Amino acid sequence: SSLFATRNSPCPLPYRSGSPVMATQAYDGYFKEGHKVKTVKDVEAEKFIAAFAQHLKRQGRFEIPKWADVVKTSKAKELPPTNPDWLYVRTASMVRKIYIRGGSG
Image (cartoon, rainbow, N blue to C red; front, side, top):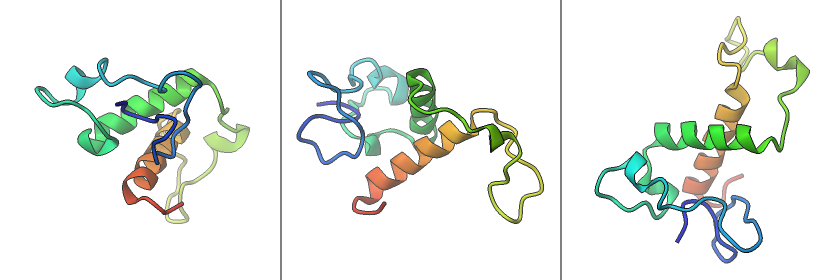
């Protein structure tokens, strides 16, 4: 079992040939003491989002657009996000939401 995806799992996250994207053994102690991590639902939202955002950033599969430092995230906001990695955090949050709600997206 893996935290993210296997070839036959319904998980929307990518699968690399031969092995899951990330193994659970490396993260079991980090997320919840005494609990085995089997799905994204077993991980606290804040910790999963932070860890997956770092994973996305390390992968380097997408770049933050040039306009990201001036864009607002809603019409009610006056300033852009203060976190320079906000796009990775937002993406990780949406991945978690789509995984948990299943069928949306």
